[in-house]
Length: 184
Image (cartoon, rainbow, N blue to C red):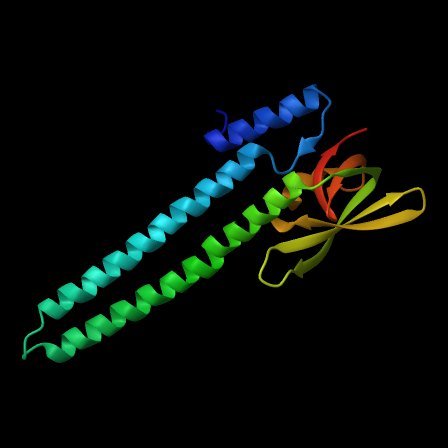
């Protein structure tokens, strides 16, 4: 039996097949990808605020059920709830919502940027950089004729370029990032 693929995977595969068939540049950040990032960010924000409201309601509920006989137990329960939900909220805000927002900003920048084209042998290195308050990137090297160009690839897009490593490709470059590719 074949694998069960999600709608996003099927859409991305269809887009890649169309681009290859039409001999066009495969864009790493298509409008569909930007839309997917926007939806992901919106859904995590909704979850974030729902969790915050539930935690507040839980603390209020625990406070309303406090009696003199159980006041120390309820105080510990409110503190435990606040700490656990607080750490979960920090994690969601910092590592999910912010990361998605940074990637979305880069995707929009790359879509809007004027893309120069270059052709050569592509090698994606293991060198990883973290742009402060932004996304993680990997370094890719494009060798053309004796000239070496160092480019950046957003970490989440390295898998899309991995099969091309060591092969001759034509790249669309926007602001020093690889924004698209096609085989010559």
